[in-house]
Image (cartoon, rainbow, N blue to C red; front, side, top):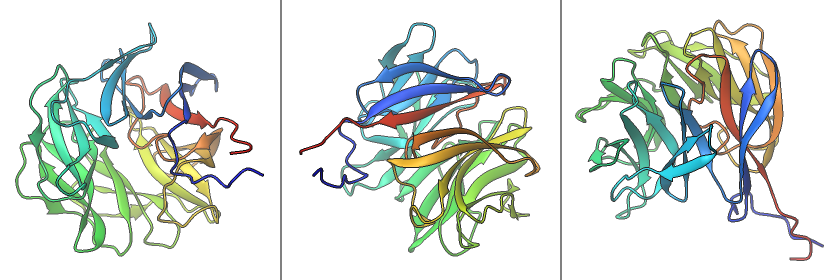
Length: 296
């Protein structure tokens, strides 16, 4: 009899980088990888995707199916929280620093260069870059509470935007810089929320009684939101784990017309960061397969 698999045992995950087309409803697999990749970002010009794998960031060309590592200098323990700059010239990453294995945010030119430390306090998990290029938004644990913070892109004093008990995570700006979308467990289950960029008007946007909804990603045209949903009872509301049967959902930006568009095996790594194409007609995601381990 096969042993029950630890969901965090991902050394032999098979990863399928795919695209969902909103107009046709079709799912297209761009490439199958024989190793773990996570969290696709689409470039602002639509020419390439970035993802993380093995602590590094890669650029993926959909036309050729080829990947190339980005030179991130000493930042080689990147997790799945990374975002491209609005002009596509730089990437902000969350790197597990060796001195204490806490995640901290760095920026680095996409052509390669010396990483710049932005958040000296850890843990900090990057999720958003304001459309004017001036501000980063991230989830951070401070004094035992996980909340949403912003900081100037050059670094400096961080600003706390949420103070609700429990996990507040996944902040990202809309393309106008008016709202920050995020997810919060403050009402019992994880749900999608949004607030003004200054932290005011925090508003619940999903009310799923049977699901935990994570990482609401607003489309570039501000019309639609994609989300990943875990069935209630499959995990604790504050958990975002891999190796689960999950659903990708889309709703209108006002919270109406919530609908499931893809069912898949995934979770952690599937859509941790915004993966909308710049034309707002499709988004990228990663699903996973496991090898048969019977008898191990």
